[in-house]
Length: 579
Image (cartoon, rainbow, N blue to C red; front, side, top):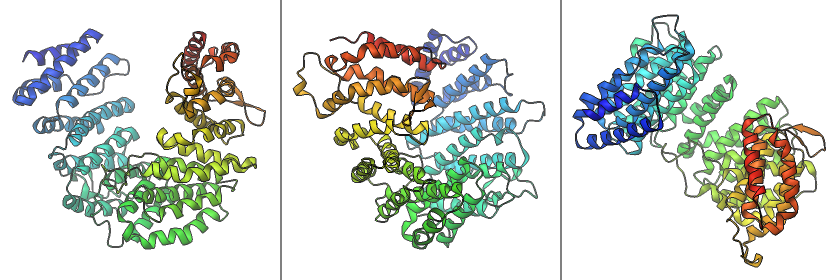
């Protein structure tokens, strides 16, 4: 097949724009051919592409070989979505995955092996993602063929070592597991779940792994005190397996005790945010789908957990962890508009004044309203329409009221919460409040904030408001401007001065002392500065033009190249800014 040979030949040559265009055109033709008949693709194209893959990772200096195999895998993942072709892809790549995960030679570079392994798995994940989006019926079949092997590879690597222990590799395997389970019927999910929970909670891992990887004496106990870090890192696989389960799937005969155990042991043993996050999302997924069965669990959280783990004086790290747990449980209730969600969320306000956890409670409003990959319709979560917008509209007045408080400390915490919330929701959810929000956000930049990340959040929120405003029309009278345009004009000069200050490598905090800035903050400030002339009339900003052009000199000498580039763009915009 001439088209296949063209792709094969292009892979052996150095990439150029013309060659990439020809390759993409040939790929489109192959996809068209596959819609009529899969035989030419399966018998001619795929063997050519498989033959172009190396059997071992290329050397560290051979960047062209790495680029070549990544291109081959990209073509394969695009081409291999039909049932027969995907089966052929898995049949070819899975043995390669095993060979790279458990190399026969000890001289293999583990970093290069992990990168190659990640690329092989990513090809399967990309093809699988397309199949899931297109609702292919064969996806669920891989629960009995592909998944046991992938679980086995991860468990063996966690216990014995190897490139499959790499967290990036584990993460892409988790994604594959989640995609397969999304397309599994509730009845088959129930069969799978009956083996899944004992595997992770009781050490019965052999039930979900290919036998060849589980040697006698293997003891996999991620929730126990003597588990290794590598074992606990596999909690992300548990999360990926639990998240897509249908709400009709029975988790455990005593679901309250089961969820309590996952939360207690998971948080006690977690060594890092990755492990903790998996535990919290597992709990949130189960709470969201089984809230009617979890009355005892939620009652314990409301009556005991809040007072003993959050309010009571103790380890600050543990109290912060408890706030995160409380937030995820609240979010699980919130996305389904459960009556208990708001009482849970309202309690966060009561610790705003706590010097140790007040800021953490404030930041929780961003997580509460933001999107996540667990509590989604794709995963079978109970999600009500426009839940985030409704929550934001309802809670904004209280946050704005607190942000106006005359007490600096109280106002600061409310401003952190306010910024976290509006950064997490669509602009339309708060656009009506912009006249009142603008001065509050500017105040947030003048007050001492707990970290540069919060200040960057504020600037990015202001930037969102600016870039979503309609551009000015020359000759249009100011009286015809919208409310948001008027607000921007009122604060434009102050905004320009503040952004100039924040764009410097060393900025001035609200206390008047020098504070080291961050590249993220400086980039956001420069982008906002460059966006202002598009939405504010020249007569309003004209007095600031000379100061801005002069003030950008510091940013043009920034140690970060990305910041210098943004400063050049902002300077050009202001230089061309005329009436």
